Image 1: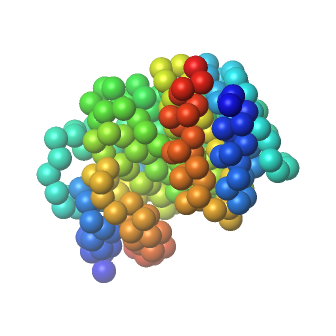
Image 2: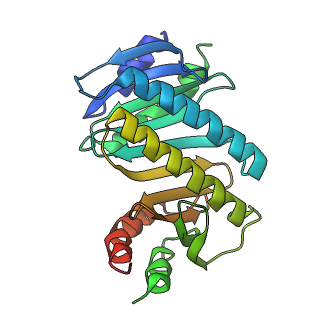
Length: 118
Length: 118
């Protein structure tokens, strides 16, 4: 399997809009889109990569240990993120009324598999 | 009831470490601590307030609608945050093995009550 197949798996969560493996530099490695949205996903992913980078730096300063899962809910979209390695992370964007629990679960299962693809 | 009673309610989640009403300027309005931790909570709360402020700005740029719930998991601590109004937010810090679902639920219930205290 490649990145794409794992991302398609993650998108099985009801309400999934897109899943992506992204670099912390904001450049996507692979993206699977599973539903339409009027949110600018590309811009969102770049913002999220910057935020996650800042969070990791903060976690280092505060010695809280590695950042695991981060989720951000807004009125129009929920994003769940997981770092994969020092350079890349995976993100699932969902509708706010999507199956958040299943999204979290599928992402947690996919993360080690995605790590194995690097 | 005041802020403190609502924060104590939130801390009923198993594994809760502290709950706080914080300004986006990083200054806490009230904090309830329910368990010991070797993480520097004061520094953590300041970092989180900065991050949440950045997130709201990004949400504005991307027109995703208001930021609702944000959660950040690290190896030693999980934080769940909810904006209350343009100046303040509430945050629950938990052990990573704490009852995350209950923490989310109690925070969601407490948010409108806390809003009513301003």
